[in-house]
Amino acid sequence: GESVGLHLPTLSVQEGDNSIINCAYSNSASDYFIWYKQESGKGPQFIIDIRSNMDKRQGQRVTVLLNKTVKHLSLQIAATQPGDSAVYFCAENYDKIIFGKGTRLHILP
Amino acid sequence: DTEVTQTPKHLVMGMTNKKSLKCEQHMGHRAMYWYKQKAKKPPELMFVYSYEKLSINESVPSRFSPECPNSSLLNLHLHALQPEDSALYLCASSQTVNTEAFFGQGTRLTVV
Image 1: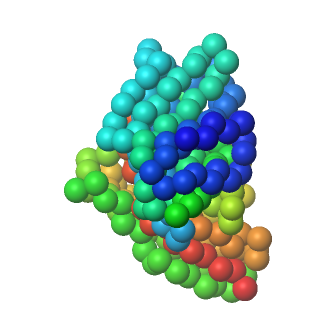
Image 2 (image 1 turned 30 degrees about the vertical axis):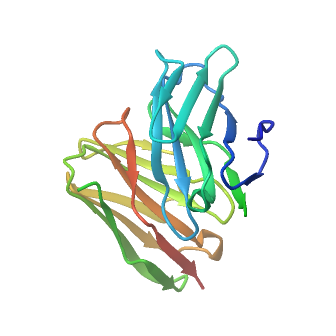
Image 3 (image 1 turned 180 degrees about the vertical axis):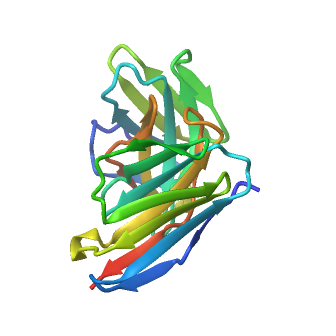
């Protein structure tokens, strides 16, 4: 897998490797965080969420980590597949859902 | 059923036209949202309805007018738009304002 710096617009990962997508959020009062996947021409699709009383949550092939001290989120995708190609957005929610800049995940064959 | 349905999928309108975008959900959600998304940018929040009342307006120009006729429906009325308003307009809903939101596929709007 490849770890990337914050706000990197594109992440290229070999098929089968793990992907790590990072995100910084701005509001220390945010208590709920969501990762969305958006494929070309479609609306954002919910992947996984986490509340501020947790630091890790796992789903099917995905894990979200939350570090409140540095206001940082990451999304880990295990065994990346071609169908994972999309733009991934983190979103923070205090009384409204605000999206971060997004990272395009590109899968190499 | 976790579906949010938006109509139409595509819309081309002139700057003097009046049109409406429609959004429907049957998940019993009490919060509904309008977002605007330009190419290669994240969705930007426009409006939030909570229990059929407008709770957030993100300083959106008055040429965009939202309406929530009932708990399942959300409309966005458009009037005298500008070419720079061309974008993908996304509707979303969630159980309440602090829970996961589900998005529709969007309406691709072109203003000519």
